[in-house]
Amino acid sequence: MDKISVDRLDATDISILRILQTDGRLTTKELAARVARSATPVYERVRRLEQEGYIKGYVAILNPDRLRRGFVVICNVKLRELCREKADTFVSRIMDIAEVTECYNVSGKFDYLLKIMAPDMDYYRDFVLNILGTIDNISAIESTFVMETLKSGTAIPL
Image (tube, rainbow, N blue to C red):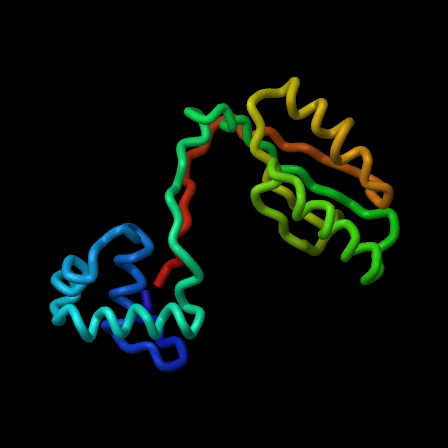
């Protein structure tokens, strides 16, 4: 696979990004040791990568099963009318729904793809009827239920 050259990123920047994607809790000293650099320049690089928007933030990845949110549904949504105002209204409503953890504007038969995390099928049924069903401009919903997660990640290949 080719090495990635993005804007002004050098090999050390790419290494830092790769490492932080897998462990964002490393101290600057630990990170510096892994990239074979001293702590101060690594600290400055990380700050620059944050300021330039390469690093958007740091999060803890939670276990959805332990939190009763392991029932994952991929939901395709088609809008009745597709114009800027109607799309903006739909997206605004979706952004306020906690169960929707990802939303993509897609091409093809449907307009949006949602990833929904729920406790179980009964909860999802009520969610479709009482939450998604209240959004006026939806003309069709197609739900696909995830039976087993075989690969899931947050890392961007670098």
